[in-house]
Length: 110
Length: 114
Image (cartoon, rainbow over all chains, first blue to last red; front, side, top):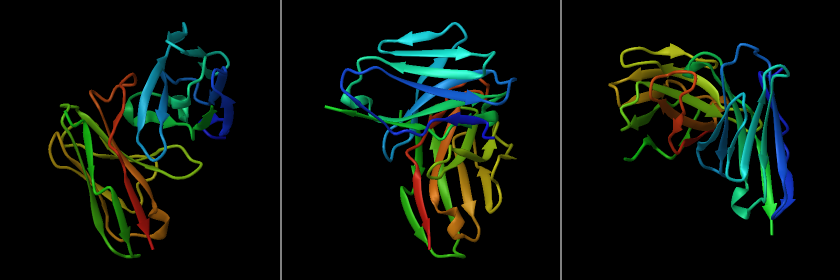
């Protein structure tokens, strides 16, 4: 079983749609959780951290369920510029313990 | 602030050739990392340097060596390239190496080994 699992997609959605990505992790001792965004042929960049209480940044909402070892990302009112791969990232105990999911591709169409 | 820079951007090698990938950061970060990214797989850690003067193996270190030249620079060397090392290589840095640190990535090196 992979340590961090994501649905690879692709998700094809029209502009304005709401789309949700899910991610599960296997290490119950994991401490920190993130979503990174990676554009085609570019480097990953931090989108947002994920907290137990849930957090929101504009159109983006991230949720963490420690009991189920599950992380989610909700994108509302999708824009063409949201087209990218979204990486679920889990950290056990230090930068060298960062585990990246394989990513979920999103295509937003006009 | 350039952030994290990597050279070269692209490289084609023949099996058995050697090369060094260069990485530098200007954010005064303590920790630096080398990852490889292959299709359908998450980024996998090759080597990391928690602080200047230290290096340690990650998940997939075989066939690679690293040098933390100073606080800014962390290089990755392929001594005898193999087709299985065809990949995109990313260097990253973090301020302290802590669990909650953001990872800052360079633009990547696309390496093909024939």
